[in-house]
Image 1 (cartoon, rainbow, N blue to C red):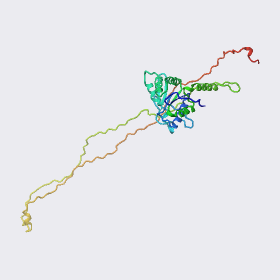
Image 2 (cartoon, one colour):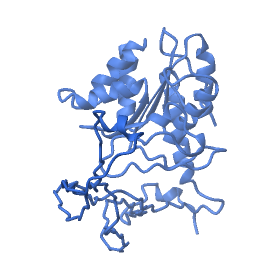
Image 3 (cartoon, rainbow, N blue to C red):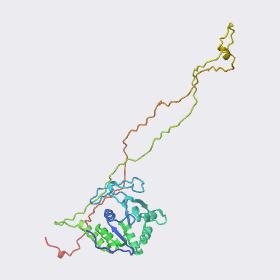
Image 4 (cartoon, rainbow, N blue to C red):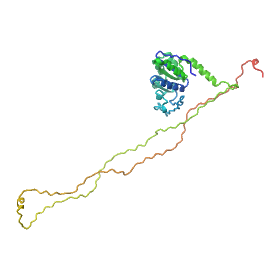
Length: 333
């Protein structure tokens, strides 16, 4: 059931919503984005890491594993479930507060608080950041206290669409300072109802414990580099080449008369060329494969111990409790 109508605690069109359940805040953001509010108008802050463990109504469950030491979600989610705000969640470790995720207009605010060693916690940054959007300092301190106590926070710079943004937040059990009393009373009523007696007068108090669930993912744990170098060397190959040699020899012959037609040609100056031929070496290069380097990978299974801290509730019964009612008023058996 949604809370009662809330009024905005700002004078600049900013609506602030507090949520007991983070999944309700995520669902409210999804509806705000579907209504046309952009990621520049919406702010989100919550406790815990950036793993989106719970899906929204009507959407597929989405889980994002950030891995050890990761600082942010890795890009867009599967199937387009996560929009511009929740698709850019940043995971922060803030001293005095613990793991915190933030996005939208609250992302830089809490990011600056986490980076500032003098702040020590998100309070100074969150109060100052809300004040810049028009939230009064008194209201900003209230929202800071609620955030520290574990509530999730959604802000919307709605402008003239305050009523629409407030209605969406209320639809997902969000409330602002004006409805804090009614929301608190509703929460306490819900708590009592979980321990209410049944028709036979039996009260059931559940004992709850956390259990570890280990998920595996592929990561790069190393690499093998193969480097190729080119080296040069001078190579000499013996080769046999053939060539013609010219020998000139003058010989005496028996005298003979020349023909009348040869007389004119016989007494002309001329140069007679005799070509001399031979072989020359021409070198060409051919690349051939003479060997190869083969890299094989084998998958081995190793067992290691994964540990974390889990919580468990214990229900203790005080058997020494005495009945303080007047014995005279007790029913007779």
